[in-house]
Length: 262
Image (cartoon, rainbow, N blue to C red; front, side, top):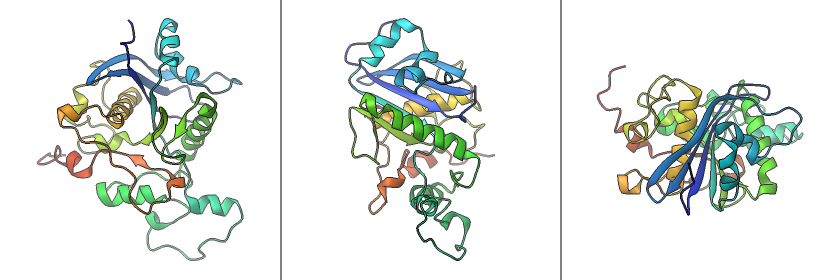
């Protein structure tokens, strides 16, 4: 297999915890409107005592002969299924700055637990994400944030925290928002499901990693010829230091769920 000329590389990563051997990664090459899956790995563990790098995420996915070509690609997006920031309220708390001293009207409005983008997801999709600071997701989030920080020396930027899109971008995505019924066991909506290799089955980490990769491809403009809309950009007034969950428009996703019986 050869990487098509002028390809853009998209990496989808379904994150597990620091010591987990069940990380899942899927890698595709995007050339115009054409997608070619370069490889994937449904279970791997990062090498102990070795610095994080782009190579450490890619190596489990395919044969080593492909690695140099991918590493040399000019445009790369890593789409990660894990929070890439903690809430500003939580960060202020751990740094000793005063915080609200009375309970919020509901859990989702607790600034120590949830980011503005997560409240937006709850309001738009009627689906409440896990809290990176209050739930076990903190294990995954801290790994993803540390990994993203380590890739700065390889010219990667965290979007939107570190500005607008760059040639090497890292974005946060949420595969569950693209599924019919939005539960882990459900398949992706048809425009995405038809692009996922048949050996990847719903309700698996590698399936979610493939969805992450496809969302990264949409972020780069793939799908417009297929009438797949662009991902929703950060809303006005949001604190970009808290990050953003890049997703398809809620109305578009819901259009595939009409009349579905659970």
